[in-house]
Length: 473
Image (spheres, rainbow, N blue to C red):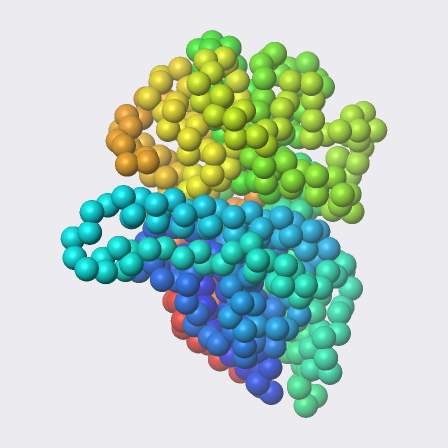
Protein backbone atom coordinates (compact mmCIF):
# COMPACT_ATOMS: atom_id res chain seq x y z
CA UNK A 1 0.00 0.00 0.00
CA UNK A 2 1.04 3.59 -0.41
CA UNK A 3 -0.17 7.13 0.21
CA UNK A 4 0.32 9.94 -2.26
CA UNK A 5 -0.05 13.41 -0.78
CA UNK A 6 -1.99 15.34 -3.40
CA UNK A 7 -2.87 18.46 -1.39
CA UNK A 8 -2.35 20.20 1.97
CA UNK A 9 1.26 18.97 2.01
CA UNK A 10 3.37 21.94 3.01
CA UNK A 11 0.19 24.03 2.97
CA UNK A 12 -2.85 24.30 5.22
CA UNK A 13 -5.55 24.12 2.55
CA UNK A 14 -6.36 21.90 -0.45
CA UNK A 15 -6.77 18.61 1.41
CA UNK A 16 -6.37 15.52 -0.81
CA UNK A 17 -4.61 12.26 0.03
CA UNK A 18 -4.65 9.22 -2.23
CA UNK A 19 -4.44 5.79 -0.62
CA UNK A 20 -3.77 2.85 -2.93
CA UNK A 21 -4.31 -0.62 -1.42
CA UNK A 22 -2.28 -3.70 -2.29
CA UNK A 23 -5.04 -4.89 -4.63
CA UNK A 24 -4.99 -1.60 -6.55
CA UNK A 25 -8.17 -0.18 -4.97
CA UNK A 26 -7.84 3.61 -4.77
CA UNK A 27 -9.32 5.76 -2.02
CA UNK A 28 -9.24 9.56 -2.06
CA UNK A 29 -9.36 11.18 1.37
CA UNK A 30 -10.90 14.65 0.91
CA UNK A 31 -10.85 16.75 -2.25
CA UNK A 32 -10.39 20.32 -1.12
CA UNK A 33 -9.86 23.70 -2.70
CA UNK A 34 -6.53 25.45 -2.23
CA UNK A 35 -7.15 28.87 -0.66
CA UNK A 36 -4.22 31.20 -0.98
CA UNK A 37 -2.04 33.12 -3.43
CA UNK A 38 1.25 31.23 -3.56
CA UNK A 39 2.53 31.42 -7.15
CA UNK A 40 3.69 27.79 -7.01
CA UNK A 41 0.08 26.72 -6.31
CA UNK A 42 -1.46 28.78 -9.11
CA UNK A 43 -2.59 25.73 -11.10
CA UNK A 44 -3.41 23.43 -8.17
CA UNK A 45 -7.20 23.76 -8.23
CA UNK A 46 -7.51 23.19 -11.97
CA UNK A 47 -5.27 20.13 -12.20
CA UNK A 48 -4.93 16.68 -10.64
CA UNK A 49 -2.05 14.57 -9.37
CA UNK A 50 -4.09 11.46 -10.22
CA UNK A 51 -6.68 10.37 -12.74
CA UNK A 52 -10.19 11.05 -11.32
CA UNK A 53 -11.80 8.19 -13.22
CA UNK A 54 -9.43 5.70 -11.57
CA UNK A 55 -10.53 6.56 -8.02
CA UNK A 56 -12.79 3.82 -6.61
CA UNK A 57 -14.00 5.57 -3.44
CA UNK A 58 -13.86 8.98 -1.82
CA UNK A 59 -14.09 9.60 1.92
CA UNK A 60 -14.82 13.13 3.11
CA UNK A 61 -13.87 14.26 6.61
CA UNK A 62 -16.01 17.43 6.70
CA UNK A 63 -17.62 20.19 4.68
CA UNK A 64 -15.13 23.05 4.83
CA UNK A 65 -14.29 24.13 1.27
CA UNK A 66 -10.59 23.43 1.69
CA UNK A 67 -11.61 19.78 2.21
CA UNK A 68 -14.58 19.38 -0.17
CA UNK A 69 -14.36 22.29 -2.61
CA UNK A 70 -13.13 20.41 -5.70
CA UNK A 71 -15.62 17.52 -5.55
CA UNK A 72 -17.84 18.84 -8.38
CA UNK A 73 -14.77 19.10 -10.62
CA UNK A 74 -13.67 15.62 -9.55
CA UNK A 75 -17.03 14.21 -10.66
CA UNK A 76 -17.10 16.31 -13.83
CA UNK A 77 -13.65 14.96 -14.71
CA UNK A 78 -14.63 11.32 -14.38
CA UNK A 79 -15.03 10.13 -10.79
CA UNK A 80 -18.16 7.99 -10.33
CA UNK A 81 -17.65 6.20 -7.01
CA UNK A 82 -19.39 6.74 -3.67
CA UNK A 83 -18.50 9.71 -1.46
CA UNK A 84 -18.74 8.60 2.17
CA UNK A 85 -19.32 11.21 4.88
CA UNK A 86 -21.56 11.88 7.88
CA UNK A 87 -25.20 12.92 7.49
CA UNK A 88 -24.55 16.51 8.62
CA UNK A 89 -21.58 16.83 6.27
CA UNK A 90 -23.79 15.79 3.36
CA UNK A 91 -26.37 18.42 4.35
CA UNK A 92 -23.77 21.16 4.59
CA UNK A 93 -22.04 20.21 1.33
CA UNK A 94 -25.33 20.65 -0.52
CA UNK A 95 -25.21 24.39 0.24
CA UNK A 96 -21.43 24.84 0.48
CA UNK A 97 -20.65 23.46 -2.96
CA UNK A 98 -23.45 25.39 -4.65
CA UNK A 99 -22.22 28.58 -3.01
CA UNK A 100 -18.66 27.79 -4.13
CA UNK A 101 -19.85 27.29 -7.71
CA UNK A 102 -21.70 30.61 -7.72
CA UNK A 103 -18.65 32.43 -6.36
CA UNK A 104 -16.51 31.00 -9.13
CA UNK A 105 -19.08 31.92 -11.75
CA UNK A 106 -19.25 35.49 -10.46
CA UNK A 107 -15.47 35.79 -10.22
CA UNK A 108 -15.04 34.58 -13.79
CA UNK A 109 -17.74 36.95 -15.04
CA UNK A 110 -16.19 39.92 -13.22
CA UNK A 111 -12.69 39.04 -14.46
CA UNK A 112 -13.81 38.62 -18.06
CA UNK A 113 -15.70 41.92 -18.04
CA UNK A 114 -12.56 43.68 -16.85
CA UNK A 115 -10.50 42.00 -19.55
CA UNK A 116 -13.03 43.03 -22.21
CA UNK A 117 -12.56 46.68 -21.25
CA UNK A 118 -8.77 46.54 -21.56
CA UNK A 119 -7.25 47.50 -24.93
CA UNK A 120 -5.75 44.65 -26.93
CA UNK A 121 -2.01 44.92 -27.26
CA UNK A 122 -1.72 42.08 -29.69
CA UNK A 123 -3.95 39.71 -31.56
CA UNK A 124 -5.75 37.11 -29.41
CA UNK A 125 -4.43 38.63 -26.16
CA UNK A 126 -7.97 38.99 -24.83
CA UNK A 127 -8.83 35.33 -25.44
CA UNK A 128 -5.70 34.20 -23.61
CA UNK A 129 -6.65 36.08 -20.44
CA UNK A 130 -10.28 34.98 -20.08
CA UNK A 131 -11.15 33.03 -16.95
CA UNK A 132 -13.27 29.87 -16.76
CA UNK A 133 -14.97 28.74 -13.53
CA UNK A 134 -13.48 25.63 -11.96
CA UNK A 135 -17.01 24.26 -12.08
CA UNK A 136 -20.52 25.67 -12.35
CA UNK A 137 -23.81 25.29 -10.49
CA UNK A 138 -24.80 22.59 -12.96
CA UNK A 139 -21.92 20.41 -11.76
CA UNK A 140 -23.11 20.32 -8.15
CA UNK A 141 -26.26 18.09 -8.37
CA UNK A 142 -24.43 15.20 -10.12
CA UNK A 143 -21.78 15.36 -7.41
CA UNK A 144 -24.34 15.37 -4.60
CA UNK A 145 -25.94 12.24 -6.10
CA UNK A 146 -22.78 10.33 -5.14
CA UNK A 147 -22.84 11.32 -1.45
CA UNK A 148 -23.61 8.55 1.05
CA UNK A 149 -24.37 9.72 4.60
CA UNK A 150 -23.24 7.49 7.48
CA UNK A 151 -23.59 7.67 11.26
CA UNK A 152 -20.83 7.98 13.82
CA UNK A 153 -19.28 5.09 15.76
CA UNK A 154 -20.33 2.24 13.48
CA UNK A 155 -18.09 0.27 11.15
CA UNK A 156 -19.31 0.49 7.55
CA UNK A 157 -18.30 -2.39 5.27
CA UNK A 158 -17.37 -1.04 1.84
CA UNK A 159 -16.26 -4.39 0.40
CA UNK A 160 -14.54 -7.61 1.48
CA UNK A 161 -11.25 -5.76 2.00
CA UNK A 162 -12.29 -2.45 3.55
CA UNK A 163 -14.30 -1.12 6.51
CA UNK A 164 -14.66 2.55 7.47
CA UNK A 165 -15.40 4.15 10.84
CA UNK A 166 -16.33 7.78 11.52
CA UNK A 167 -15.83 9.32 14.95
CA UNK A 168 -16.80 12.86 15.92
CA UNK A 169 -13.82 15.17 15.36
CA UNK A 170 -15.49 18.11 17.16
CA UNK A 171 -14.29 20.56 14.48
CA UNK A 172 -17.51 21.66 12.76
CA UNK A 173 -20.99 20.19 12.45
CA UNK A 174 -20.62 16.67 11.03
CA UNK A 175 -16.82 16.63 11.08
CA UNK A 176 -15.25 13.22 11.48
CA UNK A 177 -11.96 11.42 11.84
CA UNK A 178 -11.63 8.50 9.43
CA UNK A 179 -10.40 5.05 10.43
CA UNK A 180 -9.97 2.38 7.76
CA UNK A 181 -9.62 -1.32 8.52
CA UNK A 182 -7.93 -2.93 5.53
CA UNK A 183 -7.84 -6.73 5.31
CA UNK A 184 -6.19 -8.26 2.26
CA UNK A 185 -5.29 -11.96 2.19
CA UNK A 186 -5.62 -12.16 5.96
CA UNK A 187 -3.31 -9.21 6.68
CA UNK A 188 -5.08 -6.49 8.66
CA UNK A 189 -3.84 -2.91 8.60
CA UNK A 190 -5.40 0.05 10.40
CA UNK A 191 -5.03 3.46 8.73
CA UNK A 192 -6.24 6.74 10.20
CA UNK A 193 -6.91 10.24 8.90
CA UNK A 194 -7.66 12.84 11.55
CA UNK A 195 -9.28 15.32 9.17
CA UNK A 196 -9.33 18.57 11.14
CA UNK A 197 -9.25 17.96 14.89
CA UNK A 198 -11.55 20.18 16.93
CA UNK A 199 -11.11 21.47 20.44
CA UNK A 200 -12.48 20.16 23.71
CA UNK A 201 -14.89 22.29 25.73
CA UNK A 202 -15.99 24.39 22.76
CA UNK A 203 -19.58 25.62 22.35
CA UNK A 204 -22.24 23.74 20.36
CA UNK A 205 -20.36 20.59 19.38
CA UNK A 206 -19.28 17.50 21.27
CA UNK A 207 -15.62 17.11 22.17
CA UNK A 208 -13.35 15.24 19.75
CA UNK A 209 -13.40 11.48 20.31
CA UNK A 210 -10.03 9.70 20.01
CA UNK A 211 -9.65 7.29 17.13
CA UNK A 212 -9.02 3.55 17.49
CA UNK A 213 -5.37 2.53 17.53
CA UNK A 214 -3.95 2.52 14.01
CA UNK A 215 -0.73 1.48 12.30
CA UNK A 216 -0.46 4.58 10.10
CA UNK A 217 -1.84 8.07 10.69
CA UNK A 218 -2.29 11.18 8.53
CA UNK A 219 -2.59 14.02 11.02
CA UNK A 220 -3.40 17.72 10.68
CA UNK A 221 -0.97 20.23 12.19
CA UNK A 222 -2.42 23.70 11.58
CA UNK A 223 -1.66 24.93 15.11
CA UNK A 224 1.16 22.50 15.88
CA UNK A 225 3.42 25.25 17.20
CA UNK A 226 1.15 27.08 19.65
CA UNK A 227 -1.42 26.90 22.43
CA UNK A 228 -4.77 28.71 22.30
CA UNK A 229 -6.10 31.03 24.98
CA UNK A 230 -8.46 29.55 27.55
CA UNK A 231 -12.23 29.88 27.12
CA UNK A 232 -13.02 32.23 30.08
CA UNK A 233 -10.50 34.83 28.85
CA UNK A 234 -12.00 34.51 25.37
CA UNK A 235 -15.53 35.46 26.49
CA UNK A 236 -14.32 38.39 28.59
CA UNK A 237 -12.08 39.69 25.83
CA UNK A 238 -14.80 39.52 23.17
CA UNK A 239 -17.14 41.53 25.39
CA UNK A 240 -14.35 44.06 26.10
CA UNK A 241 -13.71 44.51 22.36
CA UNK A 242 -17.44 45.00 21.71
CA UNK A 243 -17.71 47.66 24.43
CA UNK A 244 -14.57 49.51 23.37
CA UNK A 245 -15.51 49.58 19.68
CA UNK A 246 -19.29 49.96 19.68
CA UNK A 247 -19.91 51.84 22.94
CA UNK A 248 -16.80 53.94 23.59
CA UNK A 249 -15.69 54.65 20.00
CA UNK A 250 -19.19 54.27 18.52
CA UNK A 251 -17.72 52.31 15.65
CA UNK A 252 -18.30 49.06 13.81
CA UNK A 253 -16.90 45.74 14.95
CA UNK A 254 -16.33 43.71 11.78
CA UNK A 255 -15.74 39.99 12.23
CA UNK A 256 -14.68 37.89 9.23
CA UNK A 257 -15.87 34.36 9.96
CA UNK A 258 -16.32 31.12 8.10
CA UNK A 259 -20.00 30.68 7.28
CA UNK A 260 -20.00 27.19 8.78
CA UNK A 261 -18.91 26.74 12.37
CA UNK A 262 -17.25 30.01 13.36
CA UNK A 263 -20.29 32.17 12.59
CA UNK A 264 -22.65 29.95 14.58
CA UNK A 265 -20.23 29.81 17.51
CA UNK A 266 -19.94 33.60 17.69
CA UNK A 267 -23.70 34.05 17.37
CA UNK A 268 -24.30 31.47 20.11
CA UNK A 269 -21.87 33.31 22.39
CA UNK A 270 -23.56 36.65 21.68
CA UNK A 271 -26.93 35.00 22.34
CA UNK A 272 -25.70 33.88 25.77
CA UNK A 273 -24.43 37.40 26.50
CA UNK A 274 -27.82 38.79 25.51
CA UNK A 275 -29.67 36.28 27.70
CA UNK A 276 -27.42 37.20 30.64
CA UNK A 277 -27.97 40.93 30.00
CA UNK A 278 -24.29 41.64 29.24
CA UNK A 279 -24.47 42.48 25.53
CA UNK A 280 -24.66 46.23 24.79
CA UNK A 281 -27.85 47.30 23.05
CA UNK A 282 -26.45 47.46 19.53
CA UNK A 283 -27.58 45.76 16.33
CA UNK A 284 -25.80 42.61 15.17
CA UNK A 285 -25.79 41.56 11.52
CA UNK A 286 -24.85 38.21 10.03
CA UNK A 287 -24.22 39.29 6.45
CA UNK A 288 -23.76 36.07 4.53
CA UNK A 289 -26.44 34.13 2.67
CA UNK A 290 -24.39 30.96 3.11
CA UNK A 291 -24.18 31.51 6.86
CA UNK A 292 -27.96 31.95 6.99
CA UNK A 293 -28.46 28.63 5.19
CA UNK A 294 -25.79 26.92 7.28
CA UNK A 295 -27.42 28.06 10.51
CA UNK A 296 -30.64 26.40 9.36
CA UNK A 297 -28.69 23.18 8.78
CA UNK A 298 -27.30 23.45 12.33
CA UNK A 299 -30.86 23.51 13.61
CA UNK A 300 -31.65 20.32 11.69
CA UNK A 301 -28.83 18.25 13.24
CA UNK A 302 -29.20 18.27 17.04
CA UNK A 303 -27.51 14.85 17.12
CA UNK A 304 -24.23 16.78 16.89
CA UNK A 305 -24.89 19.08 19.89
CA UNK A 306 -23.00 18.85 23.17
CA UNK A 307 -24.74 18.60 26.56
CA UNK A 308 -24.32 22.30 27.34
CA UNK A 309 -26.23 23.36 24.25
CA UNK A 310 -28.96 20.79 24.91
CA UNK A 311 -29.37 22.24 28.42
CA UNK A 312 -29.32 25.81 27.07
CA UNK A 313 -32.18 24.91 24.73
CA UNK A 314 -34.35 24.49 27.82
CA UNK A 315 -33.79 28.21 28.52
CA UNK A 316 -33.68 29.54 24.96
CA UNK A 317 -35.21 27.48 22.18
CA UNK A 318 -33.36 29.54 19.54
CA UNK A 319 -29.66 29.69 20.46
CA UNK A 320 -28.82 31.28 17.10
CA UNK A 321 -31.14 34.27 17.28
CA UNK A 322 -32.14 37.20 19.50
CA UNK A 323 -34.07 40.45 19.09
CA UNK A 324 -31.27 42.70 17.79
CA UNK A 325 -29.78 40.02 15.53
CA UNK A 326 -30.51 40.28 11.79
CA UNK A 327 -29.61 37.68 9.19
CA UNK A 328 -28.94 39.46 5.89
CA UNK A 329 -29.55 37.86 2.51
CA UNK A 330 -30.34 40.87 0.30
CA UNK A 331 -27.46 42.66 -1.42
CA UNK A 332 -29.17 46.04 -0.94
CA UNK A 333 -29.20 45.65 2.85
CA UNK A 334 -25.57 44.54 2.82
CA UNK A 335 -24.59 47.63 0.85
CA UNK A 336 -26.55 49.88 3.20
CA UNK A 337 -24.39 48.68 6.09
CA UNK A 338 -21.34 50.11 4.32
CA UNK A 339 -22.93 53.57 4.29
CA UNK A 340 -24.31 53.40 7.82
CA UNK A 341 -22.54 55.15 10.68
CA UNK A 342 -24.39 53.31 13.46
CA UNK A 343 -22.34 51.34 15.99
CA UNK A 344 -22.91 47.68 15.23
CA UNK A 345 -21.39 44.22 14.89
CA UNK A 346 -21.08 42.77 11.39
CA UNK A 347 -20.23 39.08 10.99
CA UNK A 348 -19.52 38.19 7.37
CA UNK A 349 -17.71 35.66 5.19
CA UNK A 350 -15.18 34.63 4.13
CA UNK A 351 -13.04 33.97 7.17
CA UNK A 352 -9.73 34.51 5.36
CA UNK A 353 -11.19 37.56 3.59
CA UNK A 354 -10.45 36.07 0.16
CA UNK A 355 -13.98 36.63 -1.22
CA UNK A 356 -17.53 37.51 -0.26
CA UNK A 357 -19.22 40.51 1.32
CA UNK A 358 -16.61 40.85 4.07
CA UNK A 359 -14.19 42.42 1.59
CA UNK A 360 -16.65 45.27 0.91
CA UNK A 361 -17.17 45.87 4.63
CA UNK A 362 -13.42 46.04 5.18
CA UNK A 363 -12.87 48.25 2.12
CA UNK A 364 -15.44 50.79 3.31
CA UNK A 365 -14.33 50.86 6.96
CA UNK A 366 -10.62 50.09 7.11
CA UNK A 367 -9.49 53.74 7.07
CA UNK A 368 -11.57 54.82 10.09
CA UNK A 369 -9.95 54.63 13.53
CA UNK A 370 -13.25 54.14 15.34
CA UNK A 371 -13.76 50.72 13.71
CA UNK A 372 -12.24 47.38 14.63
CA UNK A 373 -11.50 44.25 12.62
CA UNK A 374 -11.59 41.15 14.80
CA UNK A 375 -9.80 38.16 13.25
CA UNK A 376 -11.05 34.99 14.91
CA UNK A 377 -9.18 32.19 13.18
CA UNK A 378 -6.41 31.00 10.93
CA UNK A 379 -5.63 32.91 7.72
CA UNK A 380 -3.16 31.68 5.10
CA UNK A 381 -0.19 34.10 4.97
CA UNK A 382 -0.87 35.36 1.44
CA UNK A 383 -4.59 36.02 1.88
CA UNK A 384 -5.96 39.45 2.82
CA UNK A 385 -6.56 38.12 6.33
CA UNK A 386 -2.99 36.88 6.61
CA UNK A 387 -1.62 40.21 5.39
CA UNK A 388 -3.72 42.21 7.88
CA UNK A 389 -2.61 39.91 10.71
CA UNK A 390 0.96 41.02 10.03
CA UNK A 391 0.16 44.64 10.96
CA UNK A 392 0.66 46.29 7.58
CA UNK A 393 0.04 50.02 7.16
CA UNK A 394 -1.85 49.74 3.86
CA UNK A 395 -3.43 47.09 1.64
CA UNK A 396 -4.60 46.99 -1.96
CA UNK A 397 -8.28 46.15 -2.40
CA UNK A 398 -10.36 46.35 -5.58
CA UNK A 399 -7.43 48.01 -7.34
CA UNK A 400 -7.11 50.76 -4.72
CA UNK A 401 -4.62 51.22 -1.88
CA UNK A 402 -6.31 51.65 1.50
CA UNK A 403 -4.67 52.97 4.68
CA UNK A 404 -5.17 50.62 7.65
CA UNK A 405 -6.45 52.90 10.41
CA UNK A 406 -8.97 50.57 12.01
CA UNK A 407 -7.81 48.56 15.00
CA UNK A 408 -6.87 44.94 14.27
CA UNK A 409 -7.65 42.49 17.05
CA UNK A 410 -6.81 38.78 16.90
CA UNK A 411 -8.49 36.01 18.88
CA UNK A 412 -7.12 32.64 17.81
CA UNK A 413 -8.90 31.06 20.76
CA UNK A 414 -11.99 30.95 18.54
CA UNK A 415 -10.18 28.56 16.25
CA UNK A 416 -11.95 25.29 15.54
CA UNK A 417 -8.54 23.63 15.19
CA UNK A 418 -6.89 21.88 18.12
CA UNK A 419 -3.64 23.42 19.31
CA UNK A 420 -0.44 21.41 19.81
CA UNK A 421 -1.33 20.16 23.28
CA UNK A 422 -4.85 19.17 22.18
CA UNK A 423 -3.54 17.30 19.13
CA UNK A 424 -1.08 15.37 21.28
CA UNK A 425 -3.88 14.56 23.71
CA UNK A 426 -6.03 13.35 20.78
CA UNK A 427 -3.18 11.06 19.71
CA UNK A 428 -2.47 9.88 23.23
CA UNK A 429 -3.94 6.40 22.78
CA UNK A 430 -1.91 5.60 19.66
CA UNK A 431 0.47 3.02 21.11
CA UNK A 432 1.17 0.88 18.02
CA UNK A 433 1.68 3.71 15.52
CA UNK A 434 4.36 2.87 12.93
CA UNK A 435 4.33 6.11 10.95
CA UNK A 436 2.78 9.53 11.54
CA UNK A 437 2.45 11.93 8.60
CA UNK A 438 1.92 15.65 9.29
CA UNK A 439 -0.25 17.52 6.79
CA UNK A 440 -2.40 20.68 6.80
CA UNK A 441 0.26 22.99 8.16
CA UNK A 442 2.96 25.49 7.28
CA UNK A 443 6.41 23.83 7.06
CA UNK A 444 8.10 25.94 9.76
CA UNK A 445 5.30 25.22 12.23
CA UNK A 446 5.29 21.54 11.30
CA UNK A 447 9.00 21.27 12.06
CA UNK A 448 8.40 22.62 15.56
CA UNK A 449 5.53 20.18 16.04
CA UNK A 450 7.55 17.25 14.72
CA UNK A 451 10.25 17.97 17.30
CA UNK A 452 7.65 18.09 20.08
CA UNK A 453 6.03 14.82 18.94
CA UNK A 454 9.39 13.04 18.96
CA UNK A 455 10.02 14.34 22.47
CA UNK A 456 6.63 12.89 23.45
CA UNK A 457 7.62 9.44 22.21
CA UNK A 458 6.36 9.28 18.63
CA UNK A 459 9.18 7.49 16.83
CA UNK A 460 8.49 8.03 13.13
CA UNK A 461 7.16 11.48 12.20
CA UNK A 462 7.31 12.63 8.61
CA UNK A 463 6.42 15.91 6.87
CA UNK A 464 5.58 14.95 3.27
CA UNK A 465 5.87 17.33 0.34
CA UNK A 466 3.24 17.81 -2.33
CA UNK A 467 3.04 14.76 -4.68
CA UNK A 468 5.35 12.76 -2.42
CA UNK A 469 4.51 9.05 -1.98
CA UNK A 470 5.03 6.91 1.11
CA UNK A 471 4.92 3.14 1.32
CA UNK A 472 2.96 1.51 4.11
CA UNK A 473 4.93 -1.67 4.77
